[in-house]
Image (cartoon, rainbow, N blue to C red; front, side, top):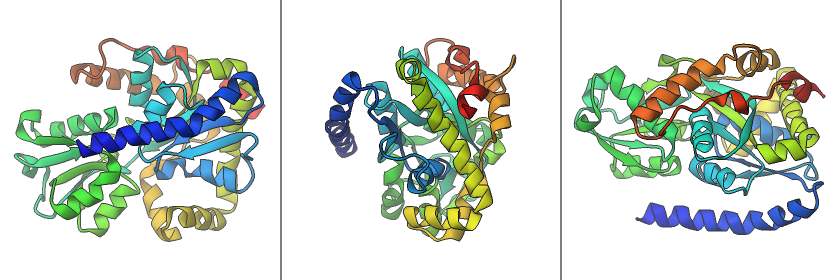
Amino acid sequence: MESRIKASWLKLFLMSLLLPLLSACDSQPEQPLRIASSPWPGYEPLYLAKEIGYLPPEKAKLFELPSSDITLEAFRNNSADIATLTLDEALDLMESGVKLRILMALDVSHGADAVMASPKIKKLSDLKGKRIAILNIPLGVYMLSRTLDAAGLTRKDVTVIPSAESKHEEMYRLGKADAFITFDPFKTALAKRGAHVLFDSSMIPNEIFDLMLVREEVFQARREDVCNVAHQWMRTLHYMRQSPDAAAASIAKRLGVTPQEYLNMVQGIKTPTLQENLSLLGGKTPGILNAAKRLNVLMKSEGQLNRDIDINAALVSDLQTCVTE
């Protein structure tokens, strides 16, 4: 009950923060784009772009929200123009009638999403009869399903505790769960308290994508501004390659960790280049389609989707022109 009350309060707070911008945006298209995001190392290039001046405040306002489920709702209820969300969340939005475009594939999880377990759980089969805290988002259920498959267990074999990722460290400290489906920076926080990786996304490669989504009406009305955000993302990645030490130091300071701890976090993340984005999201057979179909099947079986979702309509046909213009 307490977590639901706090989530509701946060949503109300978010609405009060963003509604003035929404009203201004209706009458003045030149208002900065509202970008909603949540804690995740793969999204840090956005904050770096802001810091080094690639995304000045008159072009974009970047809001870091406490958790990804609140980011999802901010995008769903039109309180954000652009949001950083996962592929499963994009499918969820599309089924609910939200028209959107997938502007960029920001990263592919390759170990960063994980099941962190207490020391007493040494192997996957030890999860039987245990309490597993999962994210309040479709990704949590997806990781749970893949974990149980790998363990040879069913949902009846475990106790599932839905909870926000920001609560996992406290839950571990208080002994309220035995394993946690989570991601960095929360994964690192749990590791510091003694939890270990039991299962992670490197065991299911090319299945978990983080995306930059834009509302369809915003894409149509403000294409140049929207495409500029994608362009600045790629420009920031170039800066990070050219000045890795400065970039790591800046990001680490924002996250409150050491540069090495930040670099350890992103070891489990693959960041697609422009060409890789074009391969994933463009061409005759976009690479993301197989992952979307696999997700669609699982989400239907879990009751998260009621029908098949075709993401082709959400792809940008001239993505290269958009990003480089």
